[in-house]
Image (tube, rainbow, N blue to C red; front, side, top):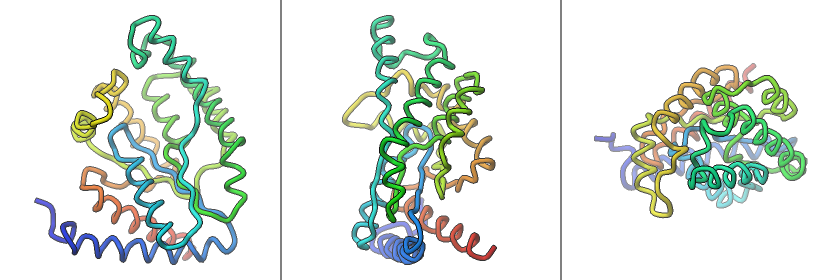
Length: 240
């Protein structure tokens, strides 16, 4: 049973208070620079959901905000190749070498940043990133790719101002994936692989200065916790 503050009107009031506090803090920072907030986590952790909730809340607060997800055109070839070899576009691992796959993805992430996201960062707005280099590097490491050139490619990118890791047990993530209406659970979302990715995320979290949020709670509770943790991090940085 969840604590009553996460339920009904009380939960909605907590969320409004949290987003109001966060909006005020970010509005002050926007006077001098853009703000990037990146979300990472295993499939089923709720990245896209939390990005959408934050975007909608910031829009209601009349803050300039853009939500974006990296465009990875080169990786479509990986899916096509996997389909031609196995009949399943998502059965690429471990068939297609991990280092090759993830270096291709890294190059696409870097190219997308300089083609689109860099221009957005030049404007004074909040940029919400649905997946970041932390995300892609964690998946690469979990797949046992040679990180030498993959990491060098990612080092070309600036880190987000804030990195949020939505941490969720694999069993919870898989249950969410199975309940999706639009698509069935995919081969690439196998529990064994997700477990390796989760462990990779947690091992890298400190070096990425990630804000780790318990994402197994209902989405409104996760939203509240994310806002609170972002406010705490803003206050911590301001006090240094």
